[in-house]
Length: 195
Length: 195
DNA sequence: AGCGGAATTCATCAGTCGTAGAATTCAACG
DNA sequence: CGTTGAATTCTACGACTGATGAATTCCGCT
Image (tube, rainbow over all chains, first blue to last red; front, side, top):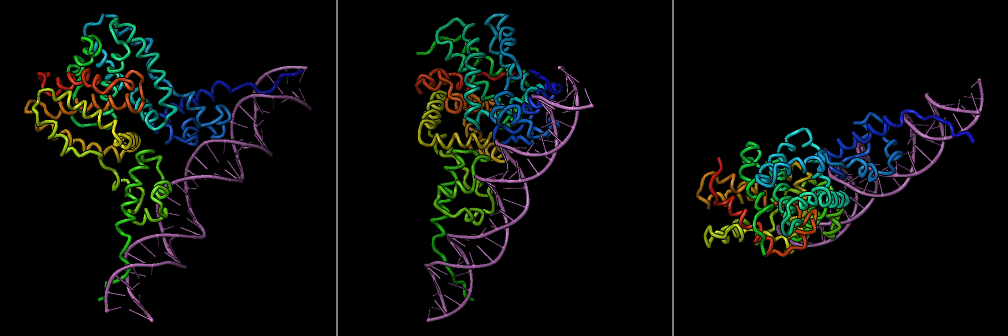
């Protein structure tokens, strides 16, 4: 039987939709984003999105991704050893948020907070890819809890400095903040265990 | 001149709308909430809301409020002195989130993250009512920055424990978490100043 | 009783959303 | 060339949104 027919633009359009979806979901969060908005950014007909991805939820699942790869940056931060890891980690975190990738991170937070599906994805991803790797490196008691506590400090920092934009944090330099916060992160990582 | 006419239910309905608005904004956040949803909770005609408050934004501004009063709890926490304040503050924070008031706090976070207007309100309120009072009590250098850093730790804790529900934090007891986190909060409050 | 006017209801508008499906375009093949 | 079938476009449906304004109810006063 003849399996012929058109077979072109496939790659191009689908990828452009995904890129536009990342950008638009990033700015608006899951609820605020619209298929028409994504299509406009992609320069594409809106009906193409449900066609390729089935639904709004489908394209969201396909588009969500971390702008940085934990498999890369975590070993790099761990390489010099556990000493000063708290401050290195904090500084790297701030540098990432201040880089172009920061914009899509705000969108990621918007989606996670407003949407149960995104919160599930994030929980699984962070637990497996980030906390797991960190916990593996610090060979102490309660590694999961320690890594999660580090998470609370860094996520809270992002919330107040980048989302709510509290003045005294938004105007401080990365280096000063890392010096304040680094030792607390370090204590979570390598301090004495708490009952 | 006769200034007569109907003058009844005024108090009742308006207050019921406000209560319903707090509940519904709390569950859905600003974008997700709808006037019809609020009206349904209040048992009231939807058109009454724009009538009383002008618009969705109007009823939101009227409804947003902290479930706990900083003017009350901050002096109470400060009363025993600065020693152990970090742990007391953390424990009180966790108790508040675990109380019935916690539900509306999640909604407050949803609104703050998804809506610029709510973020403005929150920034002003927290700066003036919470950080201001704290900064006044600790008579050390950089009181605003210290209080804001405390905020990062506590907000991040709320995000991971109550919004994202990271397992190791969600299942830990309030007391254990306060023992882990309290000393770090204390360091922000009274530790040596950082360049 | 009867009137003024606030409180409340009702119908509806214009706009946007996600989605579905028919119609059209067009590269790849026989 | 002509057929095939994926890629793309177009149109539209049904549901929902915030908001408006006219109609109605009914209390408080004279």
